[in-house]
Figure 1 (cartoon, rainbow, N blue to C red):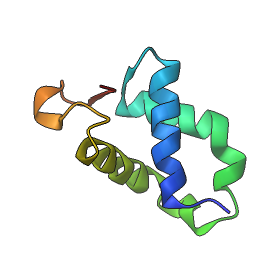
Figure 2 (cartoon, helix red, strand yellow):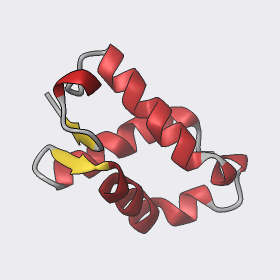
Figure 3 (tube, rainbow, N blue to C red):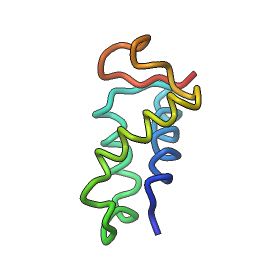
Length: 79
C-alpha cells in the first residue's frame, strides 16, 4: 500500500535521476511515469501532487533538499 512517506523516497529518486535537481513539474512527471500503477486505486491518487510538495518540505526540514529561499523558484535540489 502506498503512503505519503513513499512520496519522500520518490522525490529523491526523481531528483537523483536528473543529476540531483529538477523542477516541480519534472518531479511530478517522473513520479507519474514510474509510479502510476502504485498511485492508482489508492486514496493517495487524489492528493499525490499535494503530498509530493509535503514530501519536499519534509526533505528540507531533514536537510536533504536545499532550502526554498536558497533555491531558484520552482526548482528542487538535493544537498
